[in-house]
Image (cartoon, rainbow, N blue to C red; front, side, top):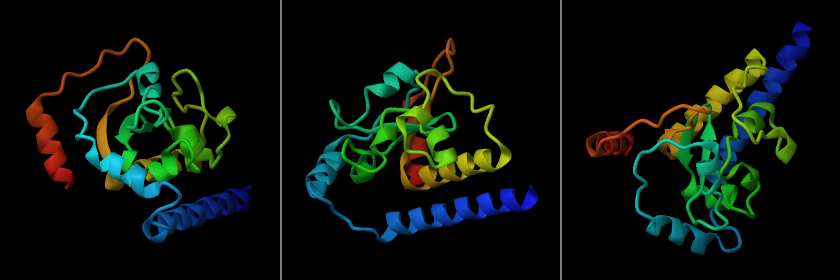
Length: 171
């Protein structure tokens, strides 16, 4: 049992490392990549706000050029990574969605994602650690724009000062 868990954990870490290398040194522009990157750069920085699952779905890169996704209850603007998260990207399935379960289980099937709020309580320790690793990755690379709200949860009110302070800290 323990050897199997260790093997799965090592495989997960190897896949994460390979993905990080690909993000850092992979091809910079796929077909239409330059146009999408230019469009992403032209968008103003998004003001901090919280999102319900329904509100998050609007930002899938198809109708709206901005692409958001949630990881572990946090929403990130991944528009500058549109070649990965855009409609034709390999991770486009996560756009406008809570990507936590798919990232935790390394599953890119739509069936792996939930249409209702997902508390991730059925994930094992290795999968939850993977979610936290992905969250750290997204924090390093993309702008944090707010929280993913649980059903019935009220959104926070963010001041312009909080918004500015956080953005300057990240740069």
